[in-house]
Image (cartoon, rainbow, N blue to C red; front, side, top):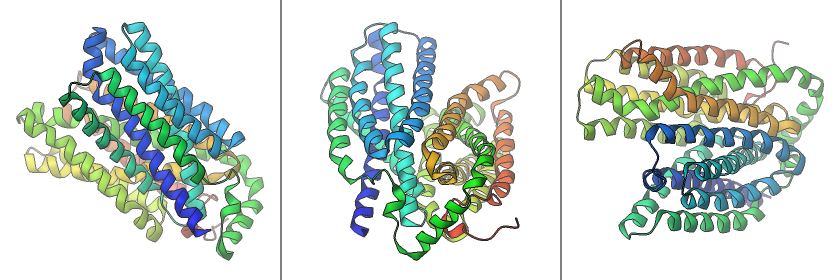
Length: 406
């Protein structure tokens, strides 16, 4: 049994790396595809919205399919389709075909994103301890692999369309090869030990309370939107902050995002241990508070060292928040884990896409660093709401299975 769980955990890591690699393979080839299709930056921005719309739709569809068909079907099928769809943008020759290909690729990527997160919840439930943040950390590893592969393809003169097709084909093979290690459709059958059986009984006895769980799921989704809005803003505005506000060179400014991304990856590698010891909602609450301190340093600090420290704290604080929210949604009702994760992931993805645009709009009214006050408010709100979520009747971690006041 333990060997089966370890294999399932490794397979989950593989699918997270795969998802990050396939999305990264598109990102690293954006400049070449933009030039080939001969579109402006503004048109590209509109096409990225199409990609986001496809991903959001795919998340909602995959959530329901995962609940009805099981992860053993939806995860590998989504991985295969995503690998195939990656080749489509490289073949586009005009804005319309690029829009269609991005819609399809976004849809398939959204399906893979949600279904693999649902399987991650099942693996975490079978382990009886937090493992979700580690999965999310490996998604970033996929982006690094895509960047290295893209650089290698460019250095050898390989056409972007061929490079994306090769990456997609490798992704298809990996998705199929890893499918056998996924947990069966009924994750509770894989649980071991008396503690896990006791939790199953607790979940069964709380079935009447599921009728009131919908509001809590949407609250978790709103928190995901706020956290991922902050993350999206950091992705697009961290380097510009150092260049435009502090007057650094472009080379120095690039280290702002690198600092943020490195801190976020490091935090996700550590967050599971913190969640096991202190509880997932403590990670959410204190992580959001740490992020608020970090972005306050960025917004108000006039020194370069303060900016780097602020972006590091911002990434470190945000790192564990999204995995805890996804895990909470998946554990709230095992019978509807797919639908619940899709709601949280979908609304969070909206926040990720909206973050850069919202901050950009605010820069028409105030300076860029002052626009970051919005991010401070969102982090403070998340920190405050994290304590409320911890008192809910649905535990998100085995370590949090304690009696509540009601």
